[in-house]
Amino acid sequence: MAEESEFDPEEAEQKEIGREMVDDSTGLGSVAAHLYRGEMERTVEWRSRLDTTTNWAVTVTSAIVAYAFSGEVSHAVILAGLMMGTVFLFIEARRFRDYDIWRSRVRVLQENLFANALDPSKGIEQDAWRAELSADYRDPAPKLGYRAAFSHRLRRVYLPLMSAVLLGWVFHVWAFNPDDSFLEAAALPGIDGRIVVGAVAAYFVALLVLAVPHSSKERGESGSAEHADIDAE
Image (cartoon, rainbow, N blue to C red; front, side, top):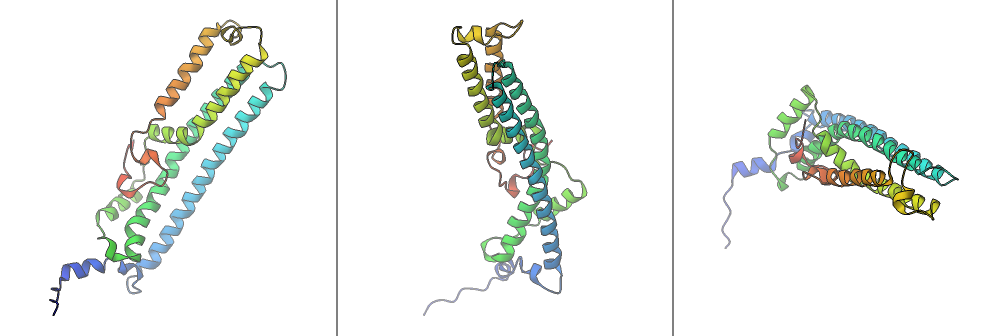
């Protein structure tokens, strides 16, 4: 005959964790549902603003490169496109920090409230997340540093975009000045070609350095509750 396992009250209590949100007597389920819906709406709204910035960056830089190849236009126009892309990158990094505020709150609720409510046996709910979320509502602050946000958007969108613009610039310099060397063709009025090429090379080296992630949260967009306060400024 198999031995009966001893009843552990603490273990039984832990397995009930998360069910309070569906208990009609507490009303927590209704409050949590409305809270989650509101946070999701804000997340979607800021995600839309983020996508709008990306669309404008791609559209503007593409139009500038297309114009540069439309006739006898200086390759300086493409370099201006690089600068415009950089401006959009700074704007998008700032917007991504704002978006991450709402995204992080949604992930905290998903990981600590809904996951435990759906299957309380998979883990023990910790009280720390409630205190952190409460503090965040009292004093909202970005949870991602500007450098981290800059790096994330650079890797996801702007480094490939800038690389495409760079290829367009190289091809323009080479194709529109077949009789000159590359350094001679890259020259601008009053600026030696070596200086122009050196500046472009330094610009892309700086982008590559800034694109290196410094934390696990920078490597992905889904985020995690345990990394919510990484690189906050």
